[in-house]
Length: 89
Image (cartoon, rainbow, N blue to C red; front, side, top):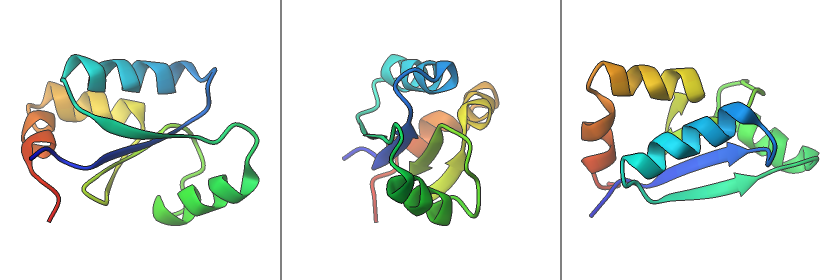
């Protein structure tokens, strides 16, 4: 069973598109929350992301991993694959 991956996005955000592209390339299934203009959803995301309001915000098995740059950093350091292979507890 694969990890539970969630990503908060805006539909036109280039960083969101880039992060989703990496997840697709890795074969990861993910739940996308497109929150264009939805302040209530953004507040929920901000609370989960320890105050971060920028997009995207990515969670793997309910662990906040950050945004696009952090996702690519995890990949470049070889840590993303193992996170994506861990099933949700």
